[in-house]
Length: 492
Ligand code: NAD
Ligand code: UGA
Image (cartoon, rainbow, N blue to C red; front, top):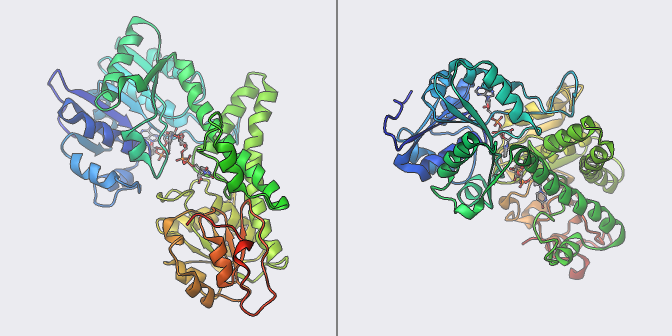
């Protein structure tokens, strides 16, 4: 454990939870705060902490390695000494996981707050001086109140001030997002002690964030804003994906439609990328959380409204898989299909709720043989995901039907079709003439991320299908080469 700072100017920051949020966020606070801050990130997971202290960090984020290696041992420390870190802290971030409940009341919908509660109880048990406790995890509205009550009920006279400070970083761009956030949101009690705690927390961000981007609100607005932001973002994706299905049926092109509507300054161009479906650990979880909250408040229509965002996403994943089956002459049983990408988005090794998992599940149910390749996801993780009881009732089928390989070319060889499920840049740069030669004919390309050059794939000879696009593919001549205008240009 690092020695606690004794200098009055140094703020001792502890973060409970060394995950995708705790690790990167604290690395940036350490980097930007320099000698004015001392940051200790703790976790109950020894393996994760060992990885943070090693050359191979437990998460992949562009730019993170350099920062951790620069600050680690200087003003950034990782350990499992939760109690020691609580005791030395002025400010404690609680950045533990808040997954969807898998049991009991609210199963499959409500947030499971057991990790948050156990962190709060630990703080109450160990702390001997006043602390600012910052709820960084995404939680239902009013969770700060629960934290507050647990802390107060177990206090020996120390004062705890609980603030809400939700995190808006996205995986794959976490460092960029943290370095240059659209906003930092701090919610807290509007009392003298609450306002003073908000000022202390704000001063940590002021090391690098312009003051006009630090928003302060009451606690409940802050908690709800986090859920609302994720719900709005996911809702945009489900909306454009709903449009994509109309495009496929009519010949409208979803990228042209997205450009046309995104040009409207009231709508804006971001998060209008039609895809095989959104994944990630948070969109679904946080919308379910909002649905549960709405219904618990008797707002059934509101709950049902947000529920549709998830239903549309499930439909999109299923529709993509069903299109593969339909185009491959209504059966994929025994056919070989390459799955390019398993992470829920590029530049991360995270697979939580990845659309790829569900596409694979549907194709495995249809009897397909899958060759799966992802540049950052380990073989063990893919197997864990595909054998999870919610995905497969028969884990042994993964052994029979799945091959996990080390390169795109290996995945594509001798297959009937390939499906791009994650938008990794390397998939754009493949030699598709070579790929075509190595595949069985007719060779099918399914672009679930709209990253490929569809016209050039068609020229090479592929039967091309893409989300939100209707192409005319030709089996009519020897080369299968259509006229260039049969497919529009994709992303490169
Ligand atoms: P994570 O699962 O990667 O990390 C959470 C860590 O907390 C784990 O390592 C776990 O061992 C640890 N932990 C749990 N209980 C503990 C305890 N009592 N004491 C010490 N350690 C404990 O989760 P994450 O992705 O970092 O997400 C954390 C929170 O932030 C969630 O509420 C999530 O919704 C929210 N969030 C996540 C992201 C993201 O991109 N992943 C972005 C914004 C917000
Ligand atoms: C998302 C939010 O963007 C963050 O602001 C938030 O902090 C975070 O959730 C969280 O609370 O965990 P993240 O899930 O890491 O971040 O990544 P996104 O970039 O939002 O992508 C989510 C999913 O939507 C991915 O599967 C992505 O491929 C998909 N997506 C995104 C689309 O299908 N189309 C788009 O236009 C954008």
